Length: 183
Image (spheres, rainbow, N blue to C red):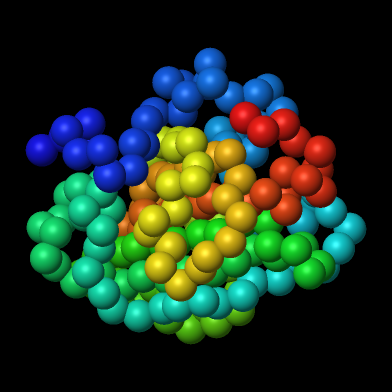
């Protein structure tokens, strides 16, 4: 089954396919392979914080199961957060990981720390290809409702046996604060 056959499915595309639609100002944010947490901290003098919205075991969305190579009915660990600068939420993120391979990863103990602050300290971190989507396609973020920005991105990250699908949606407040264009 292809997402193109179902209009309600998110339409994630390889980052290179989205580049012609994307402003050069957005490209470094959406296409960067380094830590988004580190980039956000540099972008604003306001204090960085993480607001945990939801975490636990659930079933993945169909596109998430497909990206992870899992049966749709399987259970996964998920985490939804807002990455904030001062009082403004700049990024809404949803991470999903298969339950097998999670032992020892300590993801459940992150609390109000960013996943990136843990991931990018791991010496054996591998990042898969980045896919992008034109927002608002944040249907995967069940615990959050707010102003979507123009882009979202996702990629599969691996640390040893742990695989984590990280989805990050750039919000309107970030675009406004950084004077980024609408696309």
